[in-house]
Length: 196
Image 1 (tube, rainbow, N blue to C red):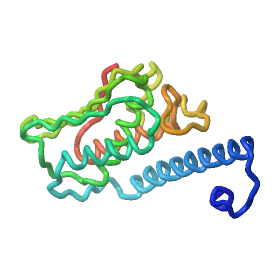
Image 2: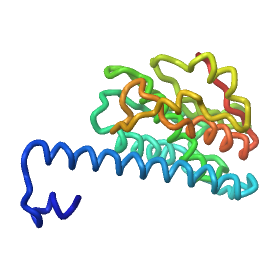
Image 3: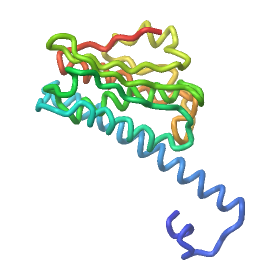
Image 4: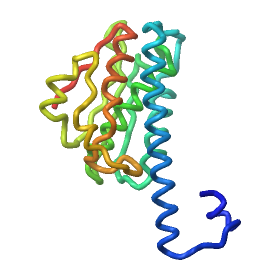
């Protein structure tokens, strides 16, 4: 694809350019599939051992938001962070926590219509760090809510996945996000809970 776009091969017309765009989108989708599947496999091999350090929670939240914004350049969904006093630092596995947050934020963006909003809030409840991702999207399906606690659950909506580009609205992903976020929460001694 780079050879064609770089002008090294001179076969350009509108249909050819559309074909290159489709190839680029498909390659991006395959890359996201590989990254998500690798994260799930790596997590399973880590035997749920987190390596905690005192982390800057605002930095982790902003990094997760930045990754999702990069994956959704055409979406017009505001994604905001609120780190409340007392929640600025916590002993967590920063890499894992960022991956779990990224999955939840991406899910929020995917199922929130353009013009909507996703908010990531961190607050301390005694010694516990509570991370909440709220959106004004369409919510979880009844099947997803019912089966989310199953450790082997991957959303059946994922079987209807089609190649997309940029977390299109209401287009199901591959079903890795919520199970990954749940495993990250549990590895830190917490839980993943949902409402709606």
